[in-house]
Image 1 (cartoon, rainbow, N blue to C red):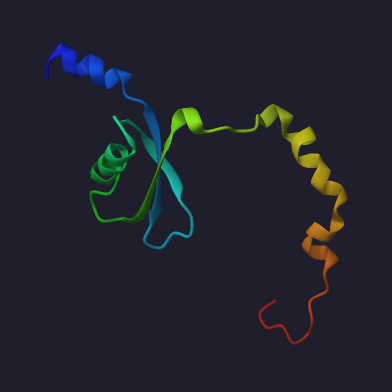
Image 2 (image 1 turned 180 degrees about the vertical axis):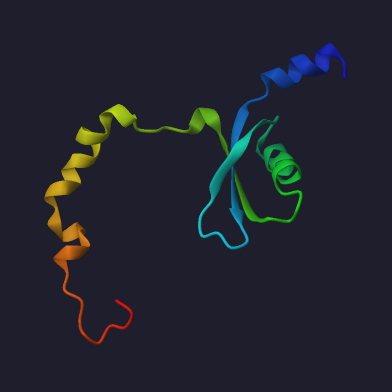
Length: 101
């Protein structure tokens, strides 16, 4: 690989890769990779992170597109839901005829 190829690849955007396993119910962050575009990111993620047929679904997201809350802001950010008791499972009564509860 020439130094020109390396310079071009360094300019490629960074993608975060999420994989859903065969028995998984949700996607889990498994790593990051650089790719020229979205389609290449999916192909590279498949090649790198699903070598043993362990995945059934792949998500790739540009790292620059991810927005997150800060752990230091958790109290003011999540506190408004605390006064909405109807969101808590203890607010509801479970009927006797509902099985396995």
